[in-house]
Length: 575
Image (cartoon, rainbow, N blue to C red; front, side):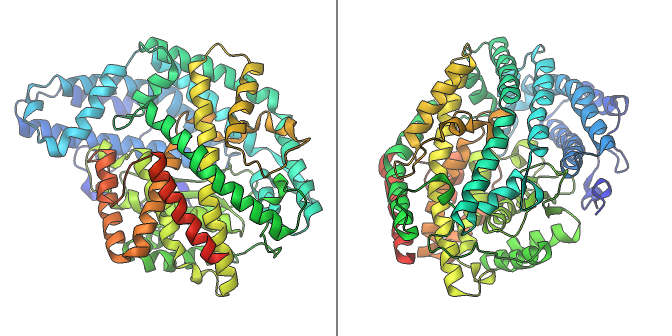
């Protein structure tokens, strides 16, 4: 697969930027930005053409930057790829950001802006006005420094390996061994993983101190008291407030954690253990060997296409196209950066999925998740405005998590044995619930971090442990493991790279449960609503998009309790 020359599907639609144009140096980019900046706009029609051309420019630059990021993640040893990526971040991005602000100002100050159709342009103009209000020239070098500094985190983690069974493997791959039936083996792997994490504690703490300082300065520069309030605006969280996040934290603690305590009690009884320990949380409660839903990457993709197609033909078609065009890099290998993502490509219209699969159930789940993102991206490919295609995470993650649960109804393609299928569904539903307290923990911790910028490392550790205890299951014995817990947040990439981008997973998880509940009641209607919501992209506000999907954007205790009760009922039918 040649990632650097992947097929472009939609070049014929380019009219402003020549098809043969490639993003290389600033001297080649600058004339197009100058043309947009200096072009007279004398009517609504000319303004709309300007917006269309600006959208095309955004797409060309976005896709070029996306490929550079893809290329450094698929092979962290590729020095040329790293050089091109660093050039884009350090040399191109700051200049583009300055021009973007001038172009945004040109738009908001244009006298014909009031003639634009609000139903078509409201969301876009809201985002642009927000960007203009937040822009500070002095934040450009800070943003560049933060982006480069945060990349140190993924480099540190991509180089973390441990030796198991005479082999060196990434921590991500080693984590799958926690599903092994041999308890002593699981415990040994657990200790190796966490001991390896501790080796970089000082480095990661110091790295975060630097990021915290720079992020706080960005907030001060923009007239905010703290980075949390600045970031809420920067993320465009117009449709909910800090209190909604606090409601989410409280609802998860009061309504979901008790359900997890019940699940853990059942797990302890099933495994016939006197005490449930952290290395007992991923093994199948029946004591069976780990599920292996596919044999290799080709098998994973073949089965995933069939599974997605059963939910809706458009879903399977998207993944099939991605495979045909070489837009999948799914296997786990040394030198490849950790994690997984779906990267939208706004010119080709066909996204790229990156992940590190072995043969586990979680790998299958990850492809269903990223496949949801990919379908969402593909369905919005024809929008011209960048904001319409760059959906907020609360909506993007609904597409991904919704796809996980809707496809679950068709997982027999992965598990021909009914008992294996039953186990897989139990594992998925346990995961759906168990991830919510961790999301709440990480988000609440970030609220504390960024509203206490003068913290030292010891104070940060104390408050992390305090918050983590709020959401921990009382049924799991962590005695003599406290030294692992003290810096457990280090394994969460989002805190280092994309602060505050994490609670969206929890919000969307609740939405996905509600969507699945609708699907169990009326599959055709639920899929139709889901498809309609995804096709909206970001042309409506978050609450309206959820309503289009036939669900609520609601974090009250009463609503969360209803969703939790539904999952519990489904689990009880399987247990």
